[in-house]
Length: 479
Ligand code: GDP
Ligand code: GDP
Image (tube, rainbow, N blue to C red; front, side):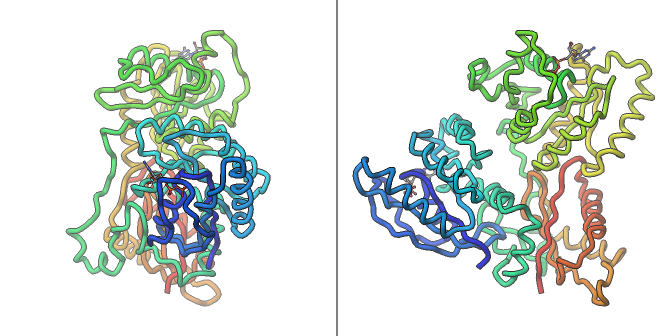
């Protein structure tokens, strides 16, 4: 047993439904009417490549409203005591209630890792509830639909992040190697062929789709950059010039988050960098980069446009921002803004592109486009780069192709022998997109040198044309 997770939340948010989905069995009773008595019982859960123990607290609220809080609190405390971390479930459809606030407070005081789960996210109107959830002070909510099984890959990532990242988990996976089976994933992409099938070649014709980009869904974009880089100017230009469409989505109100527009027929949801337009209006300048604001924007987005001032490019903060984007797993496009002020454009551009490659090796091949937010020049090319990068970020590569490539990569450069023993690379599979994430199964994950992992990541990037996006590679022990 690797780790244990308590599922907590007020009545009717969908805890039992989530419990059932993770347990893969109809263990808990789902009922519309709160008050069905259930016990706190553990079950074995599977989520993509993770296995863990889940502890449910659903249904212990049968008494009257007076004691509800008290009972919820006692139950929640008991579950958290027992668990390594908590999934705190809220209902994005019906929104927050004071009880959610009380439980959030309790969880914060406990200090155990918490993933905030915004359930029923598929429901109409759930977006408002989703953004409300930010106010609970438990970080970014992870939108899911327990009922429809949506968002399970993101939930997996959020759990991994809460536990300290893939590295922390590799140690866990070693411990529990026999439990881990990436081929038996739950959730949306449980259909990958196993390596054996793939390498044998027979799965060639049955490959999964290479890309899951859905042009119907709005592409979420945020514009970030240092103060004065030109973010407001660029956003205003995009909004003004480009055909504001579905109307500002609650555009100017205080809690507005996003503006919908269409760009050459493509639906876009643009993060309205908090207070940005308000700020521009009152001519007030914040000179400091707010990391919290930047993070909020980055987490909202699928593709982040990082605005650099071409007359003062690559300051420390610029690199910091790109780093944040990479850490959050988002795709990025760089724009060199204020291009109208640049004289020797040809020389400048090749200089800037050279520096981009040198200073940002973690996103090799990132698209970098000169623009002027002021005149609107280059915006077409910028949007093309955004849309292409979005497609790369969404790309899925078949297990068959990956393993054919892995064999070649291994032949060209076999992994070194460590302490006199060979390291066998078994097989590789893509467990997620957005950004692309791969698992490599090997005989000795702990011994594989970082330089070799880098060789593989760079190779993946080149072989499968994945420029400019973060690539995650985790190692699992496999015999
Ligand atoms: P619990 O009291 O927190 O355990 O909540 P339940 O799992 O019993 O769910 C309460 C209600 O919400 C049930 O009617 C479920 O069918 C419904 N529900 C659960 N998950 C979802 C979801 O993802 N989307 C929607 N629309 N409804 C859900
Ligand atoms: P923000 O702090 O990143 O939102 O930056 P602003 O959009 O407020 O722009 C900062 C300053 O740079 C303002 O004086 C803008 O007029 C100017 N600026 C922004 N974009 C451009 C551009 O493309 N060309 C030129 N010449 N000036 C620009």
